[in-house]
Image 1: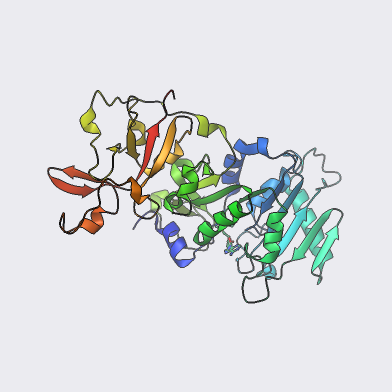
Image 2 (image 1 turned 90 degrees about the vertical axis):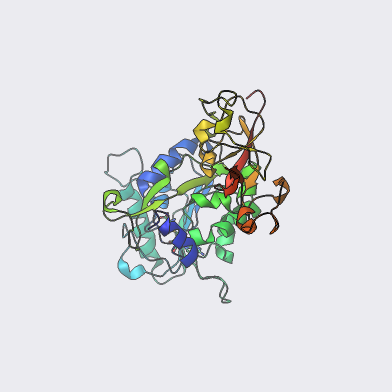
Length: 380
Ligand SMILES: C[S@@+](CC[C@H](N)C(=O)[O-])C[C@H]1O[C@@H](n2cnc3c(N)ncnc32)[C@H](O)[C@@H]1O
């Protein structure tokens, strides 16, 4: 069974319940803290009683010098966590707006801890009772209603209440539903928001995402180790026994997407290959004016023409070192980059061949994998 099964299924069958571990959030978010002071952060796919995103930012509220933290949850999300929440709270969509967090008296702590957040949420919950909204001190807990016109359910990030919360925020940080990733990202751009979000690595090839990466409007973050993430989830883990982690589900091909600048993206690749030494290692495509570089680490130091590289190149992409020209793939690819379009008169499998870059091997045309077309910048 394919390792990508769970994420691919998520997109196909709306399997969206993958809950991010606090350790993964800590690991990624540490690289962006310079962006946080004065910001209003929104976690808009996050139950404030369970989400580790909410928990992370609430605990670090003063350390990050946040102005405000808002979390909204979706009505149909199951409660996975039970960190703070009793089970009977299922299927209620909340919005919490945090402007201050008090440290519990007699705690002998200087900084906010999870106990303080838990006490704050319990206090808000008790004060809410049967009401729709309650404010205690500077914090507010509300029940979301949805659009009420059969359009978007309560807590849907596209609903009017959630759009209002988005408009009131600077920076969205969450793991959104994989099945709505395109729509989620489009909305962030439409509302001109900063973001740091988890997504399927394959999303780089979406025609709604790749052009934005090419234009340096968004890029990959630091990512999960070997692009493998482990999430809490109600679904069955399909990982082989040696890769299984108790209570978690393994997703290969997962990464972080952002438009926040970070140090890694300015770190150039160290070259180890030279084109002049072994040109035969870098064959030219039959249908693109580019050479094939089958591994990112084999990019030759002395080649300044167009090269086709694996999509995982984006994990190492430094915009000062390379320019992205396009994608050699049907869909996200720009057909104008092709130097040849095959017809039935050329080959019987002309349609398959037109799907991506083609190498002629022993006189026979062969498809390679989808490639990103890049060019080394002069003086890089
Ligand atoms: C990948 S999970 C991540 C949950 C949480 N952000 C985390 O990382 O732990 C995506 C969440 O979005 C919820 N969801 C699904 N469709 C949604 C929608 N249209 N609007 C808002 N949330 C949605 C799912 O129920 C699920 O709880």
